[in-house]
Image (tube, rainbow, N blue to C red; front, side, top):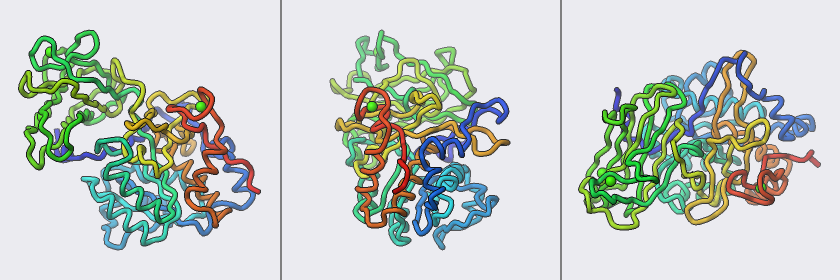
Length: 417
Ligand SMILES: [Ca+2]
Ligand SMILES: [Ca+2]
Ligand SMILES: [Ca+2]
């Protein structure tokens, strides 16, 4: 197994491609335009002309095949962009373009470590973008709106940029718990005393990802927990992440594990103290898995950065029947704020012959495009006024009023005036 990306702390909010077109129940993009009210704005002539759009993403592989009129930073190697390891950003762009075809697009491909968000923000500000879409989720705790990502988002907002971000896909693959070890063997006991938790990968992919974070000083952690991924036999360790945390300046309170997966074949995740008996009482940890369903997920609190930022419109996903897409991350944030802000469709059919794309990553650009059309029609409105317009006109779903599943409700643009 390749370990070249083991150091990533940044996680694409996966766009999953699923099923063949003829058997998949995807929503065509013209139906999305009708459903969200965007079509009426197009008919009235609002298609994004004169509005500058930024898309920050992990990879734009294949975007050269689209003959898209997009701008990348001069200093980026276009060959590296066209051959990036993921086409995630390209899919985001395609959805965005269908909703705002006449906007100007400025694209920034994050480097593989994902740590150059500051550089991305600098460049977006230099280009004078009006709206940014950021369909990438980052597991840099704490998710209380006060972290590196949120500070970068604040720089955009202070420069009057509307920022729209994916909520994340952790709705069924997140668990938080307080460490406990009644039998003293170091292995954490989940509910009912089980020392591991079952999880089933949804897709076959070269590797799955499990991420463990815990409450500790972010840059000099002293609590040493480790993360284990165990095969379906309950014995064989597939992957263990066992970094040492002992208060050093590079000791961060996290472990990340990458392991081979097969769709539907269950595995187990487990949390262990490096040294039994050394974990302080009340130590809270958080487990995030990519593209799996956990046996006993925590069904709230799975919004991660930058979706926890007060400066962004955070977008979750709904199904065609307006139920929450189950894997859409739910609020509230760690500090108790309601998130997401809005929901929009996922399970999109990009064209008749293509597979369906799924995830909060493709719901986000629908909302971002709506912000573009509003900015075009009301160039005098601040980013906050644009955001207020979108949330005020959202159609409430779930329990009455804003809630931690649907936010203010589903995106809907009333006809332009
Ligand atoms: Ca134990
Ligand atoms: Ca450790
Ligand atoms: Ca509601």
